[in-house]
Each structure stands twice: as C-alpha cells, then as structure tokens.
Length: 393
Ligand SMILES: Cc1cc2nc3c(=O)[nH]c(=O)nc-3n(C[C@H](O)[C@H](O)[C@H](O)COP(=O)(O)OP(=O)(O)OC[C@H]3O[C@@H](n4cnc5c(N)ncnc54)[C@H](O)[C@@H]3O)c2cc1C
Image: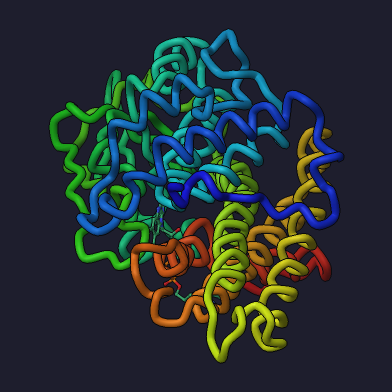
C-alpha cells in the first residue's frame, strides 16, 4: 500500500467532535487531494527545487484559494476555521504548497478584497480564486526584514500615475506571479499598497536559488526600476504599516494551522515505524525512550489542536488579536520543528531519506519559523500585548 494511504490523523482529545459537518467535509476533501496529488510528487519536486505549478488550478477548483473571500468575488465564503483546516491539510503535504495557498489567499486576495476598490476586486479576485493568475506579496527588502516600517521602496507622484522604485527580497511566488501586492512609501512617507502587473516596463522578478528549505516553493526578488503604476492600481482604503500587518495576521493565522499538519504527518509516520521496526527482538515502539518521544509529540500536537480550535472561533467572531495569533504561530511552528527532529530520530538512518517526510518537513519549517515574523519577533508582539510596552527598538 502506498504510504500516502496509511495516514491516520492524530486526534487524541476527539477535537474532530468540535468541528461542524462542513468544516470536516472541507478538511477531508483537501486531505484526499493531498494524498492523491501532492504526496506522490512532492519528493521529486523538492529534490529538483521546483514548484509543482500544475497543482495551482486544482487548488482553485478545490476552493483552497481565498476560501474566506465571498462567493461573489470567486471565493468560497467559508469560515476561518475551515480556512485553517485547509492550511493544516496542505502543510501535511508540504509547507511549500501551503505557502503558495497562504500567499495567494491571505497576502494577495485578502488585501485586494479588504483595501481594494470595487474595480480592483472585480478585476483580480475571481482570477486569483481559480488560479488563472498567481499573486505575490512584496514587503521584505534586502535591508529591512523584521522592521518593514523602515522600507525604502518608494512611489513618486506624477500626473496620472506613480513611479515605483526599489527592491523586495525573499518573496514567495515572485518568479511565477502575474501580479504583486507591493508596499512602498509615498511622497509623504506614508506606506501605500498597490497592485503591480508582471508585464509592466521596469519590473523584474528574478528567482532566488540555493535554498535548502521550501524547495518546492518558488522564491525570488521584485525589482522596480521606474515602474509606471497607474493611480487606479493603488489600494485606496488603507494607509500605513497597519495594511501589511493586517495581511500578515491573516497569513500567520493560517501558518499556525499549517504547522500542526506538518507535525501530525511526522508523528503519524513515526508511530507506524515504531510498531514495524524491530531491534533487540522487539518493536522499537516497546522501548520507553521511543514512547517518551511519541507521548510528548502527541501531547504537544493535542495542545496546539485545542489552541487553534479556540483561535478559529475567535477569528470567526472577529475577536482574535495580533498577539493571540503570534502566540499560536510561534508555539505551533516551534512545536512542529521539534517534533520533526525527534520523530526523525525514531526512524534512525531511514529518517534522513526521502522515503519518509521528516527531513523535508524539518527543512521547510526552518523557513516557516523565520518568515511572516521570526520566532523572536512573535514573542515581542505577545510581550507588547501583555505589558503595553513595545520592545522592538
Ligand atoms: C522562504 C521565505 C519566503 C518568504 N516569503 C516572503 C514573502 O512572500 N513576502 C515578504 O514580504 N517576505 C517574505 N519572506 C521574508 C521574511 O518575512 C523575513 O525573512 C522575516 O521577516 C525576517 O526578516 P530577515 O530575514 O531580514 O531577518 P532580520 O530582520 O535581519 O532578523 C535577523 C535576526 O534578528 C532578530 N531580530 C530582529 N529584530 C529584533 C529585535 N527587535 N529584537 C530581537 N531580535 C530581533 C530576528 O528575530 C532574527 O533572528 C520570506 C522569507 C523566507 C525565508
């Protein structure tokens, strides 16, 4: 039997009973798709460091692109718990596939829907939802990562357009994107968002090579050399850093679910292996040290599942704070990374091969713990909410 069909989702505290029928149906649909379309190809694409672009339209058909966007704009109009469960299942397959869907949904469709004009919504959202066009999100710059408010990319006002100059770095999807949601400072030093199209003169998006992490995700730069941005492409309903930060809150929320998926995959693989692999005449799962690893992994997964079930409900009620989302993103990604390392050891030498997913998840999670706010920065965001005192600078 193919490994993909043996997956048994850990649910120690019967959290499934807390989800409604629609949420479970959506989750199971994505789970089946990951089994059939992602797992059979993901090791090959990881090895050759290539994004499986043929999956994009399938993700659109599944409703995994902008699931929370209303149906009139091509989204699925589902709740945030369902969005989280979609991210969980995609990342069970691979963080690169989840990253693609996160960026398209939370960092491209969300700002166009939330801050865009009606014309921008109608022009871009339906095509983004089907995967006919791909988007990326340009905030990070070569010299401004954790501190995006110091960005130097600029727009200068001309008659009917702005001139955009600067560069963005570490941008997921940039080499394959048709549009980019870009954040830049205007003549008044205020951060503005805009939609930039691939074919505009002066705009290029070279790919970043040599990554040992997220190899099945396309990452690159965005370079703007006097790019003419028509005024109607500025997102009219947001000014300031809170624009990109709200997008990041939506994406970080999805990541906190995705990390649980990666951890569940590692745990499930290790349980099965511990029962099948014999040393000293017994299954290795009968040794206390291996049971400790598995019991601790299941404890951490269960805590994260409960945390995120609650976070999903808070998000559905529009009550989730940035600090709560940071706490979940930080906790769950760190948890998943530790579980990937510990469960890799349960597999001994076999754990380092691409016959099993742990090394791939582990390498991927090194990006996930860094992007959309590093592990340390999320601690500071929570600390800020606790004390009311920002400690970033
Ligand atoms: C694979 C990948 C994909 C990405 N995709 C995107 C994308 O699509 N769009 C986008 O805009 N960006 C993207 N990023 C960029 C990502 O968000 C940044 O890498 C991240 O915000 C950290 O910035 P930095 O790498 O410049 O690190 P730095 O900001 O230079 O930080 C370096 C270290 O210093 C620490 N540090 C910084 N400031 C403080 C402080 N005040 N107190 C304590 N410690 C501090 C950090 O925690 C970190 O450990 C991506 C990154 C990766 C790796």
